[in-house]
Length: 233
Image (cartoon, rainbow, N blue to C red; front, side, top):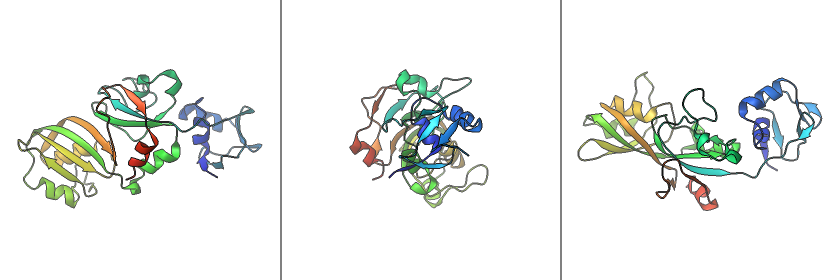
């Protein structure tokens, strides 16, 4: 029997955002098998009787969408300034949450789901899932860039990144980068540490799943079972 965090179960109903779930639990409005829930991190199996204000919570079937994220959208479900990526979805799917992040000015492959377990499998540091990016830069990469990437390049704040790989175009103005972690602005910071400034970034793949070339920026579609499995190959 599957086990989930309490917030995953409640959000999986499609009725509440994460912020709303925190408020519901803090206000004592959530019960699990008749007892008031203690925390959103409480673990529950799928047979547990979870209720909000006495009304049973029923999880939706798992959904995972592939979105071709355009620049100008925040990778979030709510935002005070720029529009969140969920604005690109129809109302019935705006409760889905992003798997990882892409910067405001970045484009490319972004997954959105209601499946917390799937999200954790992909983004946890120990997952080792390789992500591929295409970048265009100004400045010049240092001659030893690839060796430094493969050894684990050290970026601006002294952080040493995990070993990665880079394939620089012959003109030095673009490159493909492969990383296995997702620190904030990581690819941009790695390129900067190697002497180049990223002016354009697009994510092409997560694991064995590649962005569907037929999706224009802003378009999306559900993943197939084979595509979901490809992420972990």
